[in-house]
Length: 469
Image 1: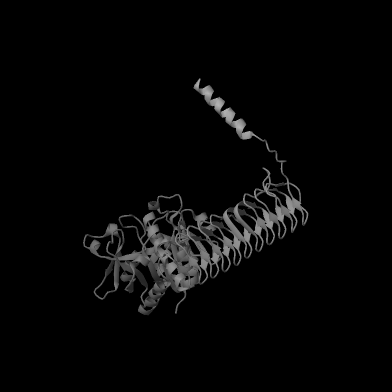
Image 2: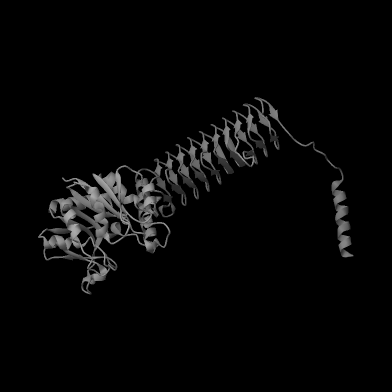
């Protein structure tokens, strides 16, 4: 078994995407398209070297894939696939095994397909092999030419193909296995004598044949695996394939997905067994959901940690937050970044929490804003309560002790501390610290004006008469 080095071609802009963002950085199931071949090389094939050839938005790609195992070759001027591989050669050094060439815009190919491809290449003992697909509509693809024995005779690009060659439905996927020793010599013999005046990597087949060296082709069973992403339509198609694969894996691991056609889970999300996902929930980024949770419809959770037995009711938005075992969130709750909800706590409808800790067993059941706060255990936050955390210049913290009862429509003007076992009367504006066990109340003295309805009725009739005059 030989060592493997991978070259990933990702220098193109992707003009048909009609985007300011380079094609390989467009997201597929929550991660950039280029993540898929890179992950294949690093973690599935475990290549000795992983070399990514980049050009457009090179700095942006480097920044996104900061990994010491990846080397980047720069192709400033895109002169074809052969030229791209030539730029990667210096990074191979004295490597003398098998070079696997992948495409940054072919993300669906499965590890088992690539392993089978490599195994066949080693078994056939040729110097080059190409992964092919048989498709109904081959327009735009290079056609595969085989000899009478079935061995690879050549690859002709669409623009250079004859009318008869264009009828061939077996096409080049752009994925190759090449002996490093042959690649380093043959790549320098590629010319530009073609319709696009580019250096075609596919010309290596003709070069090998001239030298009397064998070439082979391995046909993939499912052409969808090797579809290239060129337009937003292709992107949507690939995303749907990956989405259904992700949901299938979750269901096989013990997760209930009520409607896979309307459930959206990123590749990087983890979900525990016996959790139920209702339609139209969206789970994104580094989200990790525990066991026996319920995520109801229309809720969106991003980059958050959800403990076991948590219920997220309908239409919640949760971002960069942590929710512990047994908590209940929603419906219509909003947890902004750096929020932490401890076990058995409840955050109810139309409650917003931002950069705060809500203690065990505490509850804010409706219509409240809790920002930059530390809330203790078994605290009740009444409806309409807000923490006034911003003075126009800086954010300030509110600290609420354990077992505090906060009545409705309370304003807590930070910085302020509320001692444990204290109570705050409804409608109070708290501007000073509240001692433990105290009752804080601030209200304007109520005044009842008798006969008010008769006075208003008299004024109303008088106004009506004046308008008639």
